[in-house]
Image 1 (spheres, rainbow, N blue to C red):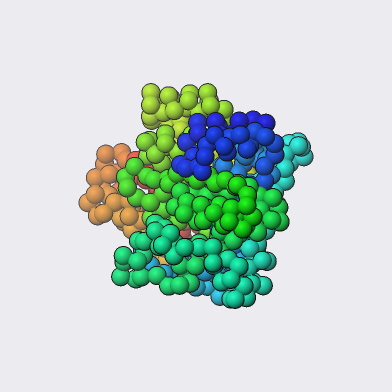
Image 2 (image 1 turned 90 degrees about the vertical axis):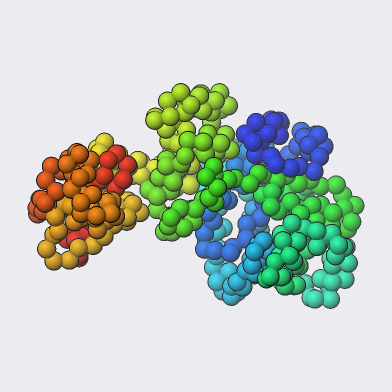
Length: 427
C-alpha cells in the first residue's frame, strides 16, 4: 500500500488526526474503509468542499474503499454555524438536494475502466438509519453516551452560546446524529476512518468516542485545514457569491476564472492542496510563480486541473477559449453565442435598447470607467478596446458589423477588465 499519510502531509491536507502513527499503521495494514459526509444545505456543493475530495481521492488511489455519505437526515437539521441558527428546509427540498449532490459527487470518485483495481465508492444516506429511530430509542441508545459538558465545549456550540442568537436543542443535537453516522457505518460497512474539515473536529471525535463506547472498537479521524485567502476575505466567494460546482449556478468559465484570478500568494498556498500533480512538478510551478509572477503559472495550473476535474475536458477547452478571446489572444468570432454570452454575463454586462450609445458612454454604462471624462481619457491613452480592437475615437458609435453572434459587443479596458454589451433581443 502507498503511504498515503506522507502524501497528505506533503500536500498540507492534514490539520489534525487522532494518532498519526496509529493511523499510518492502520492504513498500511490493508485496505481501509473510510468516509466523508456532505450535508445537502444547498442544491450544490461549492469549492469549499473540494478539499475533502482531494483527501478522498488520495486515499482511494492508495487502494482504500471510499464511502460517501449525503446527509438526508443531518441536512434537515443543519450543523451549527458560529453566528446564527440555520433555516430549516422542507423535506422535499432536502431530498431533491440529496439526489443532485449524489449525482454531482460521482465523477470525483467513480473508477474509469483504465484504472481498474481501485475501489468504487459506496453511497449512503443517513436518513436510512436515522428516520426509523424513535425519540425514546434516540435518547436511550445513543443520547446516554454523551456528556453535556463535553458537548457544550464544542467550538461552534460555545460560540453560539456566547452570542445573542443562542442555540436551539435541534442544532445542539447535530453532533449526536453525526456521531451515530460513524457508528452505523462502522456496523454496516466496517468504516474505521472519517475525514472532514477542521471545523468538524468535535463532531469527528464524538463519533470516535461513540464507537468506542458502544462497539469497543478503535477508529480514526483526520481533518483538513481551513482554507483562507490572504486578503482576509472568505475562500470560495466572489462578488457574485459562492463558487458552486454546479455549472448551472457557476459556469465553467467563471469557475476557471476564479482560480486564474487568484492572488499570487493564494495560488502558491492552494496549489499543493488542490493539485494531484507529482511533487516535483508542483515545486517547479511554485518556483516559476515566484520567479515569473506575471506568467501566473500556479493560477493556470489550478484553473486547468480543477476545471477538468469538476467539469470535464470539453468545458475546460471552452473556458480557455473564452478567456483567450475576451482578453485579446484569440478571435472572438470563434466562440459560439452561448459560450460568449455566458462569459460576458459572468464578466458583467449591460443591455441596450434602441440606438447604440458611443463607446465612451458604453464604457461608463458597463462600469469599466466611472465617468465620461475618464472614458475619453482611457481612449486617448490607448487603453480602450472594442471587440479586441483598440478604440481611437471615444465618440464613435459601434456599427452593425461590430455586433457579434448573439447580439454582443465586447469592451475591454487595459489587459484584464472586460464587460459585455448585449443588444435587446440578442439579435
